[in-house]
Amino acid sequence: MRSKGQKESKKHEARLAKKVDGKRNAGSGAFWSRKGDVRSKDLLIEHKWTGKASFTIKAKVLEKIVTEAVLDSRTPVLGISLNNENYVILTEDDFLEQRQNLQECTCQKKAQGA
Image 1 (cartoon, rainbow, N blue to C red):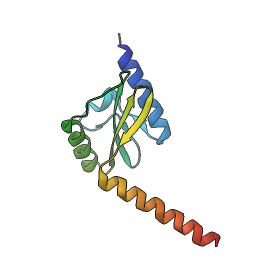
Image 2: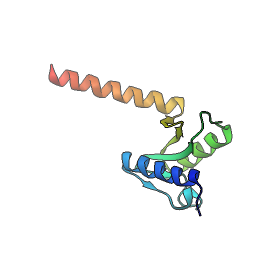
Image 3: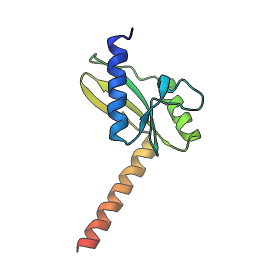
């Protein structure tokens, strides 16, 4: 029988997988060939859920998802469901790259519409 936390975690992994056009990994990435909880074409997501008001992020968890994502040619993401809110953590380099891509896209749209 699964605990409330396991059920909630699975529900949030499924929700996130749908939003990124990805799939949940069986066994939450326990198999050597399919790491992470959720994977899409470009993302590898480790997801953590807690119904509490706080959550401790350990360097070991971040290092693990970064290593696994790099080996799989995907962007590492740590998804967190905390106190009924959903968050994602990216490396600073990935965040800045995505920000730049968004700005370039916006500039191109403005130039085309002008």
